Length: 86
Image (tube, rainbow, N blue to C red; front, side, top):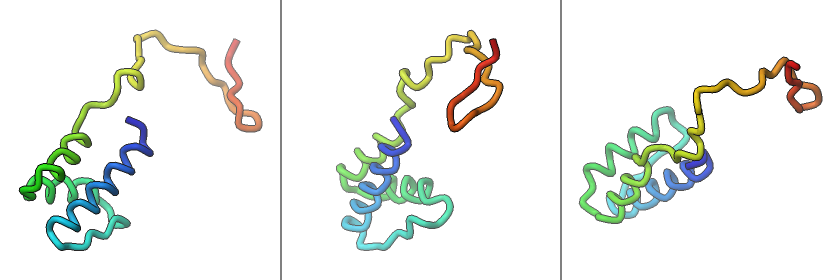
């Protein structure tokens, strides 16, 4: 799951919790993800629990393609593009 998808799901969970519990959650504060998951565990709404469960899924295996072999070493960047050691 990309960072953007994760943030979208957090916002969905926030809105569902606000609707279900009648509370307001400040998403700009530090630790909002843990707070939302804690509130979702306390909720009895199945849709809220499903949203929270989707956030607890392990990251996609496509993002974890670490075969143990190091790739080419990046020496630096020039105009935003990597310069590789040869």
